[in-house]
Image (cartoon, rainbow, N blue to C red; front, side, top):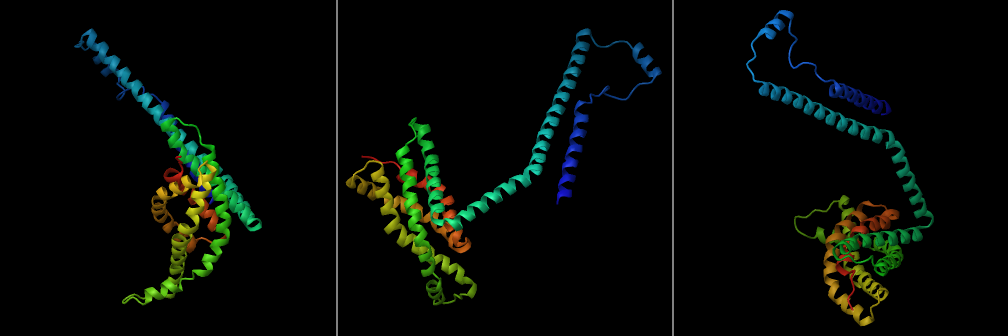
Length: 297
């Protein structure tokens, strides 16, 4: 692998030097060289062009030569820049990959040693970051300042919700083993359920339990209460905000989170499920912040 990498870098360097020579080697003549007799005939031949025509012809040839040189230099500079970037990637690939792997190992170790604290801090940071991305649009359009209480409300809510999620997900995994949906689908005529389909039905059961039980009855009541009170709303204003925003939020919730949680419950190991949800939550925080982030008194 390393030999192949060095061979590619060497080939790119050779190509660069070749382009360098082509770019800066200006052609001395436009055609083949003339012998002495032919040159004598050319000299003694009567001039058929006027002075102005001869001057313009020579001047255009000089301009064409200059344009060709500029084009060649542009090609050389582009090739050099591209090759330098490729070489940099090859040389830094191992360093970057090792740094990323080291960071992932450290994070995984933190998940094992302090799972709850790691998940809470991850959720709070990514929720605030997602809300910041959502606020950027408003700040550009209305020239408003960054709404710190709004960001803090999202971070605080997400921190509390990750604590609840840390206990809820193992319970949902235990309850949703896939047997109920598998039995229902097996009772449908012409439908045959194989043993390998149990993983799919288990992921589907867990996702449906999460989206149609946990989200409408726990997630959104806590969200609207928490964020409303932190942004200065009273209970009546908080209820009106929840009544107005619940259905639009839940529709987007189902569209976004059903496929996401199918992947989470079906493919992601249990230790990494909440970090996976937190990363996907950056996009969701942006959606939720746009739909229900603003408060009106």
